[in-house]
Each structure stands twice: as C-alpha cells, then as structure tokens.
Image (cartoon, rainbow, N blue to C red; front, side, top):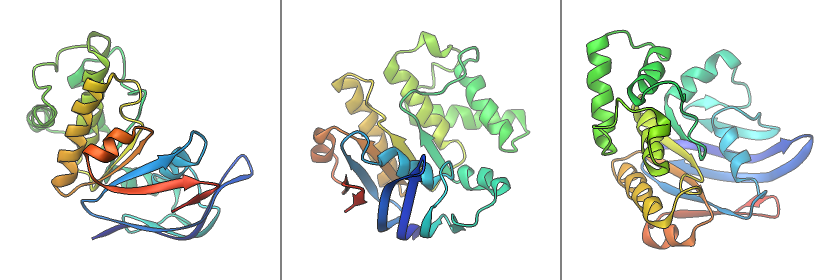
Length: 218
C-alpha cells in the first residue's frame, strides 16, 4: 500500500529552497534510508512528512492526507498514524518510563487504566525493556532511552516509523541493537524511514537508499 507520494515538491526553510523537484513514493513495509551530508535536507524532508514544515510547491500525500491543504487541527490525527524517533529522545525527565508512555496514550484518547498498563507492557516487551518501566530516563543508558523512544513510537500501531539519526549518539554495538530492532519492525510490515550517516547500516540492513544532494533527492 502506498503511504507517501510526492510530485514535484519544493521544501523551503527561512525563505531558502532546501529541496526541489522531489518525486517519490514509499510503500508499506519498506526500509528507506535518507542519505547525504549534514544540511542536505534530510531533516527538512522528515518534518514535511509529519506536517512540521509546509509544502512550498507541488503535490504531497502522506497517509491519505493532502499535505498541501491539511489543517492544523488534523495534524494530531496524521501523527497518530506514524511513530517519530528523535535523536535526542525527548522523554519527560521527571516521569518514569511507564508514565512517559501512559502520557502519550492519554493524549491520544486512551482511558482504561488496565488496557493502558497491558499495552505499555506489550510495547516495552517488543523492545526488550519490560523490566525498566519503573525507572526515570536519567537512570537509563543512551541505548535504553532510544529503545523507550521506539516503544513510544509503537504505541498507536503506526503505519510508518520516522527515525532521525536514531543511532547518532550511540556507540557502534548499542547502535547495532537499535538497527536490529528497526529492521525487525520493517519486516513486520511497518515502513521505516531512517536518516543516517552510517554506511555500515546500509550494508548490514538492506533497504532503499534516497540520496540527498545539491537540493534534490535521487
């Protein structure tokens, strides 16, 4: 199933053209790498997918939403259908792991405490963190925090995961564990779109490579 379709899209930042003539489609279950130098537009492209950056020109559809006309009130519904993995985690520091996840569930309409507890246990088990729910973020290693971020991204059964340099702050062995996890998720039928600078991941976890260069994607 087609999740993303861009036709002749232009993306701007601070009134400067960052990407132009973007033409691409992404399907369910694809593992897609965004590859290119710092400043080549990878994060700009990711932001456009979840509506944090408007489409300057062209046609763009993401998860059946027309991104050229989408209203702000519709953005939460779009974002519930995707999981976003940030390099800097963005966990709430004064909340335990379980409370961080419960906060997201409540914000997206969950009410039953027992169902929330069961679901939180399930997603933590998916990322091998089911024994860490009582801990605060600062009591976890960087790799453990990133696993919690992936668990958070999985909470609402997303159709795609967007990961912006998910191993950028991690040592190679810990990064490999995160890539193992993201690769497994893609094999389960969820599209995974990863911005990375690490050529080893492209070699060890085969996927489609989109090269960001000179203001274009190819």
